[in-house]
Length: 468
Image (tube, rainbow, N blue to C red; front, top):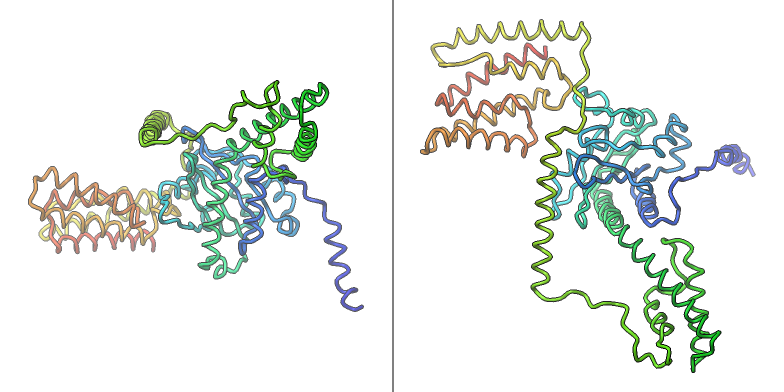
């Protein structure tokens, strides 16, 4: 009795919550797949599917490609905002807003053999001036309702590509959230969601075709019974009743029929008889599939040609730009601090140049100008973090040292060292664009290990001044 009295206010509060009305059709196969993944994954309170269009210049969320836990929607910091964020999502360019940024950063590393879950913190992206937030500021709205972590998994099926975003609360248990079992489920759920989306249009077309054949079969059986032309009227009446039950059960394309769809061909074949009732002129409704090595090779060449044409088309369209905006302007206080910091740092580097003139020939303080631009103007950008700067400079310097000793023409070494330095930074996750020139410089100037130590000393002094 006491327990019932204690829980009564809670039950009354939950009962008073307004009912959540989903825009999606609850019988839609894609929505059911996403909803099932959300209920079973640990710590996940919202899932969204974002897909790329054919030219690669836009990512969009399908109508039934999202789900949010109703309990979270009612108990979050701002329930009304949560409802709007769940129901509305504008298309965005790659690199713009949350979906565009996650699509750009994960889709290029997609690998069928090595699927991976990419984890990000919402607040770090909201505060990053280097990230384009988009016109609807959806990333900030998600942060305001209590979304803390997002997991992204890219997919690619039947030349359709996109990402699935799994969202969780700020207060989620990260150990359980990022456990091996939970990540394996998230990877498997992404495969299922991606495959469901990829077959959606074909599934709809086949369903419409089968429904049309059912209607035709029913009408012919009705006409046959009325005209009494069938010698086996009992069999026709039985087929008629079964077909009618199947037709009435198919209220939507996504509902399960009362009778297995595999029997449709047999029933249609039974009812679509020739006029003489013997079925001598009856044709098969199911064409045999393509077979043979020639057809297979032709299909592979056709797919390769389509991919090549789409790649060339994307290259032309990308030259026009994706409509992204520049980073926001700084106020005069921040601009003055940037001016003062760069001025002091360049003075110090110039003094280092004078001091090391006898030990390090052709040292140029201007090498660090790009680094200072990023450090002072894009302070919170990932490429401007101290660890990125130090590791990127060290990597490219070592690459230059290695290629300088290879006995090949200098112009080839210069090109190879730069290419290897940049691709290595990208592969190692230590991107800092100004550091790429060090791979070129170390080959051009024939620097030694001692030169490397001197240059790193100068760079460390630069960072000490900048981040002091």
